[in-house]
Amino acid sequence: MSRTVWITTAAIGLGLAALAWSFTPQSLSVAVEGMPEVMPMTRPQPPADMRVGVFQTGHMDSKALFAYRGGGFDDRVFGMDVVVVDHPQGVLLFDAGFGRKVEEHAKTVPWLMRVTSKITPEVPVIDQLSGASLSPERLRGVVLTHAHWDHVSGLDDLRGVPVWVTQRELDFIHSGHPAARLAAQLGELHYEVYDFGGGPYWGFAKSHDVFGDGSVVLVPAGGHTPGSIIAFIHAPDGHSYALIGDLAWQHEGIDIPAERPWMSRLLVDDDAAGVRAALLRLHLLQRAMPDLIIVPAHDRRVTRTLPPATRADALKKG
Image 1 (tube, rainbow, N blue to C red):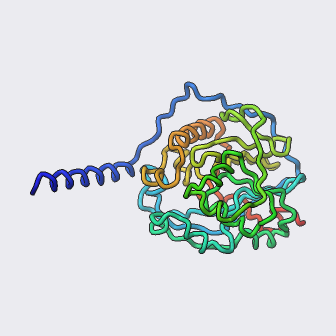
Image 2: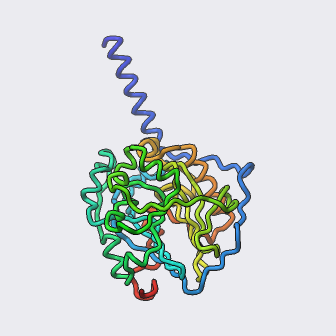
Image 3: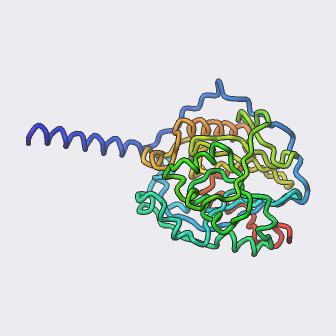
């Protein structure tokens, strides 16, 4: 064997070994020192007739292996779910899930993700609105946790509905970045930019109180995309939820805590260090508030515990 062939073979072997190592279990180091104090901005006062529900618009079948370091080969259902908040001041959707043209939209997904998962449409968000007696005209807006394809597909059927984004996320959509390809292809939607004029909230530096009563509070949590956010929702039944988008794909990312394997991070994360910081904050928040329900957007084990928004008693009739 020539020296060149030997060096090439060794390099390939080392590369494969490093790739395999990136899938092995490794938890993030949890250091409480220096982390912001976990204190609420205001005492939540959700109105008694506020309702929280969920639409299941589709799912992807994949393996835990790709979701977090140490995940095995067990099958996981990655739900494409939309959380619905019906508040007296208006109805909000959190993300838009799959739309009617999801098969066309899925062509914008990186090839490697398409071959390692199976995409299954269920019922598009526009059709589920009808089942919940909610017309698009009743929507105050769609709040994007971030602008990746599986969170914006349903916007294609909701043209004219305000789409709430941070300025950083809107800049990301217009940047030409491949991960925002579908959002850009949908054209100029009715984007509404909001800022974070409120103070610290539960370990995050800034906040935006949507209704002014503490029931829905948004905080910046860039990393997965530049302008991604977390939404804290406090329901009148005493349940509190943290919608974390794709900071973690499955709950183990918070529980352990553990980031995605290197290959998954390379495909989807804008700033791996930002994601790690957010995971650590959420892990510590879960320790401090064990009753808080942390909701990764794609962990169907969690989202199916929310009431279905199509049920007659789940959301008010419009």
